[in-house]
Length: 219
Image 1 (cartoon, rainbow, N blue to C red):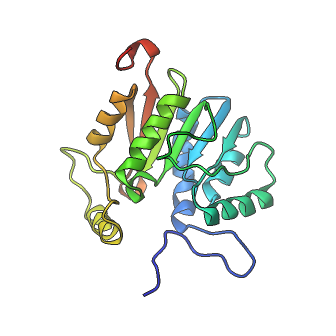
Image 2: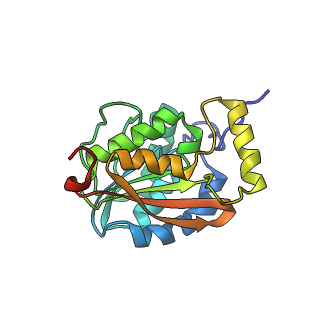
């Protein structure tokens, strides 16, 4: 059976992968990022995938330094190919970054963005994302997530339930996460969920902010 991917594989010598979902959701995500991103500084994108989002956002926010990353070599090759075509001055080369690692190849960021990552990663990767955000972000800086979630008291769309089932069939460690579970783990690391935004196709964007140092647990 052919492996099901979230992207279309490149043809021939072209290293650019393409994700149809990225083309559909990039403009609605950009509209929210205009409200939530800082006016300047470095934005670290975790699990950049094909690189299409990175190019689109770097073009949409020319005052920001956009830093894509991905632990997969094929994804980094795709990001490099899209980046080379775009030739954007503030779009940086992709980093080899695994969110579950205890050390990341970057020590600070004005914002961290992770799109469609948490549900196609082990829960340990989501916790690693929160650990990294706690290390890198200054008080008040945002961690922004996008994707399908489960919420207490909110009926989950049938399409999301089916997606969750298919994810768990592919990998027992994958699956849609509960917003409340993620927010509770974030709070233990000094990150507060301050806003949720409903998005097309039954997705959500979540805005978390790093607490002031005096408000962090154990401080």
